[in-house]
Length: 418
Image (cartoon, rainbow, N blue to C red; front, side, top):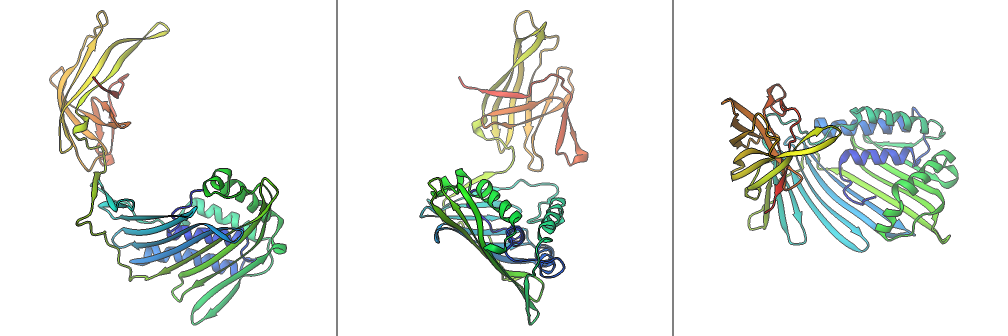
């Protein structure tokens, strides 16, 4: 398990729901506290995503071994739903080392900060004809979430008591706790399995530098509380759980987790790009635009089948002679071995125009019959390229797809280093 960002609002709610239901943070009875809390989670997701302009989520996840913190994640994430922007600042503590992460995104750019040298990486996004990239989708509208809810309902339906719900001035507080002897055997067994093989597997504990939970794994207890405000939004929560397990030497350890979150500054959160004036900044651009390092020669083999064998009969070459602002000028030609010459040996110059609104660069050339045709060229596997000839671009799909009319044409070209 990589101990990293847990700040996405919906992730917070799903984690809380899973802990409350599967790990039995509270005894539950369908139709009472459980139903109310589940509906509050759904309502919170819908209101934040569909009805608010902006908000802030603060979350802290602490993992402890024998009551000592061995890993902790502190995150602050600001969401601007109206302007499709997000800004996050995270701090992760692991093995005594503190690492910081900063990330900003909007419709035009992604920005990362490298805290080692205080530099920034700015990733400029491609212009698209249609921008449907929403900042966040409601996961409870997905089919997978609906099926998952049925599984949760099946588990909690076997529990007897209720989550305690306290109401005051329009707000609600959901409170629950569970001792070791109240935990159903099925939930204990499932939680132990997930803990050993899905959360604290051998790679994860080695990464954290803690003992591996080898045997005799069982839940010791869990408790949690969440506050729903007058607007029907769960604005804060605190969840804890503890598991006992023995390591390879038979020594018992207590593994525990504490998870808290706060949702605040609703419609009062300011999300803005960092001021990069005077900073060290590395810029890069999304898409398949070429630059000068791709000037050079590329080739692949022309192969045909004879009998039950493949034989090389020649080579195809693409020479990129100049690149300016992503636009390419070059040459395509074919060389055949003696005795294997084709009826039509192609050779032509081409211009390739880079368009930000597409996922590829379009080549324009004149074939051996004097006909104007189009091809596609883009990067592949770092230093190599892909080239397709005689293509038809599907403008009905926004110009984002194409088909080649060339049968048996190998589009993969490998860089030739002299």
